[in-house]
Length: 429
Image (cartoon, rainbow, N blue to C red):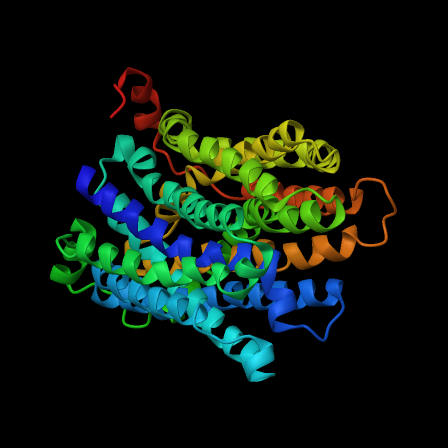
């Protein structure tokens, strides 16, 4: 389990490094480089539009790779998705700006971002199922939480490199070539991830399905016919997590640097510190999920997200690093209260023969609902608000949180009563 958890964590960290480094670049430099004929606001919105395309591609990736995972195994998904995302990310770092290629430059950016999203859409299902289906029932949330630490590690790597480059280079150097370095580094990371995953074994549950001849012949058809309501509920339930995370990690960077005049290294440092705490808290929250159930923690996380939305926006608007960090941290702790256990919760909601497709489609469709639109909506809502805090952003997050709360309320608990009753007497792994 230790080796499986480490390989899953490393892979998701690398894939999310690829995905997040684009979001940071979109917030800081892509607008003027690839959309120079637009106004500053329109350029930022256009850059976030290419950012959103990655989310739109993720459900398609979950369908494509979910079919592979349910038909041919979880293990092949982890190789193919990482290879695709890594190659697309390196290519983004090689695309010339608008000044060199004209309109072709943003078009290439759009295509490569789509391929990034396609690969990431398959990664989550493969990595989570490989861990969750190997894990013992009493500690499934704990072991399955390790792939969920990957996004935090990937974010810290991506923004750590951006922060170092931003501090070491002049603004002109950073805009000319410095922002490309993290994209090129993705190739080295992807090669290391593929090597690490080469020794992983297929999951026992998939081997049982194969030996019994019970693999789904058309997983997507079965999911659409028999589990469509579950897919919509899980997508709606998880939407708030994406909305909260990308408000903090993407929109807040733009708002802080452009509207508040905070230095970008300060903004990156505040967000990174909050993400680091969130990542460290993940396995401990997951252990609570093994004791008290998945659904109860998800409901608590939704409620906390709704209650903290207005304080977070108010603290951000102060422009003071310590208060901004506090605002970000509260939001991300509410986020991880839900997302620490979803890697165990979603697979348990779907039957094994269509689990890779169903869980991945629900998870990535939530990314479209909560992640793709949030930076665009938040940027639009924060414009024209005068000198006061952008309360429209807080209202938006509150509404999304309440919708997700309703969806979680309609989902069942999956932790067996026998496990819950014995969990307090079970020593942590």
